[in-house]
Image (cartoon, rainbow, N blue to C red; front, top):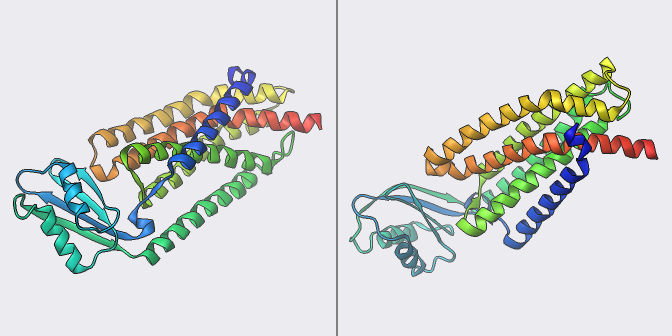
Length: 297
């Protein structure tokens, strides 16, 4: 009952964090990767000594390929992200990265994504997020169709979507901060992370809602506020254990995993944390708030 008793505080904290995240996204923005805007990605590995990243960046800038980004990977590897390059420009880039032969290297991969392909991926990503949201509303409304009192079944779905928006916005806020401080770019892995957050987060919320439904059917109390509080107490340990165990694995992947999945793991871990928070401190208080508004009207 502690969460329900102090629901205004927890909902206020959530509103503040959402506004702060939106401000971060607006001010800092999200750096869009070549998956969405098009461009070329070159991966090279130096076979002997490795030049300083700042020196590599300066050399690449001299080629006038527009905005180019140099990112170290591992001990001797480097990612170079540029606009879409022709074959001649690619060869020129490889020669430049060797510093006229002073630093021998091996080209591991070269990927080129056209602007039209990137735009199509962007549209598909937005459609995927919208379809997932709609699917969750319909599923929750159907799953709770037998619960009409005191809160209608479709409102359970609406509250689930509100909590999901809360989780996604906070995750995007963290990513915007990473983009601003570390130059991290949003790519298809970022979209995959958001979709995964949606699925895992709604799972925790549904567990709580399902226990509310059971306790309503068992009529453990005439006070809906008490029922929600008891349901939350019965499921909190389970939800926290599930989320924390997953977060530990993701943090392990971040610290010891390959460089290509570090940001994905960190984004997913952030989303899991916010999802665990929202299922306990946002979804349940909103149920009580919706019921109170209904009674007062």
